[in-house]
Image (cartoon, rainbow, N blue to C red; front, top):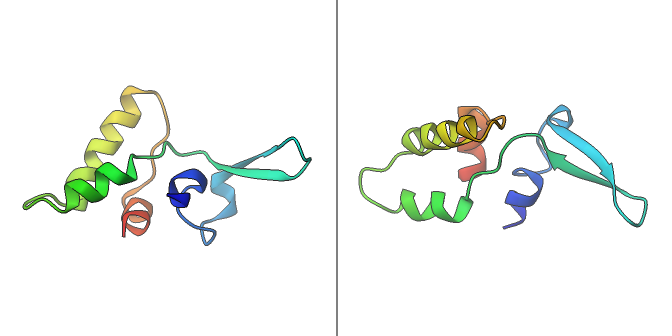
Length: 81
């Protein structure tokens, strides 16, 4: 579940994050990409015939409708896996 909070993992390019100070004065990294519902992604992947490509397209469509930036296929696949 931590992946959804910080946008996948600490290996990601720091340029994909914005920084804000929290109440303790420390920086908090926040992804600029809309975060998919990872629980739903993994549940759907367990179904026959569902692919990461299909789920990524649904994620992009939902992000676009919401006016948010979406991660590319490579990032989505890496985070889902």
